Image 1 (tube, each protein chain N blue to C red):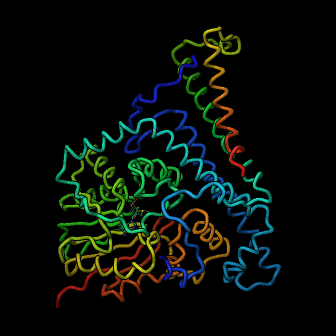
Image 2 (image 1 turned 90 degrees about the horizontal axis):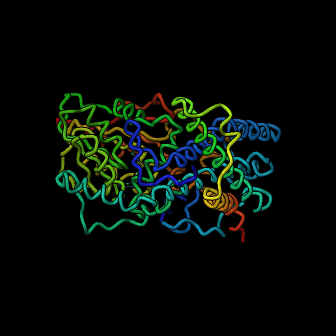
Image 3 (image 1 turned 180 degrees about the horizontal axis):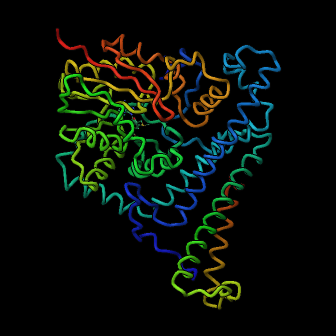
Length: 106
Length: 368
Ligand SMILES: C[S@@+](CC[C@H](N)C(=O)[O-])C[C@H]1O[C@@H](n2cnc3c(N)ncnc32)[C@H](O)[C@@H]1O
């Protein structure tokens, strides 16, 4: 397939239809594959960080709008024992999302 | 405080744009959209300048624009910005798709039910052939969309969220599709009874064409069944009466002379060049004499600039190699008016759009 095209121009026809290439085929654009993965890490980190900022901004705006939040309430808050496990689970999932890309190195 | 938000909350729509199931996913996708804007708007112009500077230093003609691709790649290779740009482009694309898929998969059953419900509500407006065989060339995961247009039952939903990122915020309310519909040529006699949007994806252009030609029967046709099903659901939700058909541009199954107006918006650069003639011949067949065909797509060989700048060719090459755009280089090398003429259409106009695209309008000769 695509032979006409290859005669026309020197573009590239992918090898396999439908499936995403297995990670082993992921191109390395940077001097070491680890550096390519680190860019993924940095981007995911940015996305996670931004989503948190966005959520906090949303939350604080609502709370202030509704007169619920005092200016220093967040800074002074302590999580109680019942809240702590889900806070820990959230952090574990966060780390896995963030550094999962490193685990894909072959 | 930290209770996970239920993913089944309906965050509704923002105008005609669906919202992701959670604010977190929406924020992350907005972030990737901004990363894409940064890569395209800030990194790419610098990379282009650096490429030109290297070409000029090597005394290459036309600032390197005519270099064979292999040499163009070699010219870019030592530039650290080249690797960084490619990596950011590909990674933001992959990460955005991953985010979209994981976000939507959590509600997969609900989306499948929505598609079924729209089909039950208006079965007379969606036309599918259970015997349809998808050609292999249509199975590639274009733009790295997981499963491509045909291999994922939720491809329509995924495509809508993915193209939101792709359009960098300029098409959130189908603005580009509305602009396209305005650039579609109407027949000289003004008679428009039936309109076809060929390669319609999720029908954003189809509904925009219905707005432009409210009295006409408007059809969208696409090879991707999940796209067609989503297009139908979307139109039903919007209360817009249009038809969708699962089929092939090169073999639409419509009667001769059936349509007054046909549009192909960014279809051609995603099909193999060997199909160009058969698609145009088929469009000619289904058009009535005096009916019009408008192609809106990337600027191609006829677009006036004799040759693409080195940076743009580098990008095109990147897309074809690493962003699963296997067919676009051949399209960009095509003379679109010539393609239409050699297949029996009269070219009326070819020119730039007020977007990044180009449009070519033609008509089927009237019977003398
Ligand atoms: C970039 S999309 C087109 C966008 C669409 N026109 C819009 O308004 O957003 C290309 C579409 O062409 C479809 N396609 C590719 N080859 C086709 C063919 N031979 N016949 C019909 N549709 C085809 C793909 O499934 C995909 O939906």
